[in-house]
Length: 252
Image (cartoon, rainbow, N blue to C red; front, side):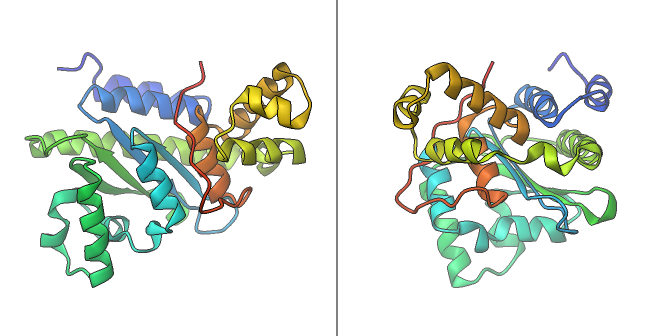
């Protein structure tokens, strides 16, 4: 049984000073409950904020395939989650909704990717600011009772509400990247290391390290893959279909 409970977690989340700290708090709580893959898809319906996508624990080749082939357009799981109050297991999808041939083909791809089972859920915020959350177990569906599933949804709902608060108070200019930072982000998307980027740009490794840290801070991310996903969602970079997505790693 995890040492931290939902009450302690809720107090910690309320005090989270930024999105990255909040993500790490949620990740720690969820990992203690067997969650090894996490994705969060937030879109402000007013259009005032750029889309936010965070993903962790998914195989690099699957993330690249999902992005390069625009699979978000045919993925039926988030759409169903938006119509349901209760979370559902990914493996239950075909018993809950009638799929189009294209959607069935996506489900077959999902199965061959060997991601394991997971939970899909929608979380809600003020002014219709909802988000889809996927929680993957990395293997077969575990035996979870209703209380355990409710605890997982409560945890991500609390985190989402805190993110909405942080997002409202953070000025839009804070997340704008300079031309040089945008260039660095595009090289990150191409899989280039900091030392290689320094050679390409004719600057020191220290300069590139500083720019990468600044990009992570502005985008409120802690790894290269999530920075690329965030940049794509915000329209800061365009991913060439031949371009690899870099491996996710936290920055400490």
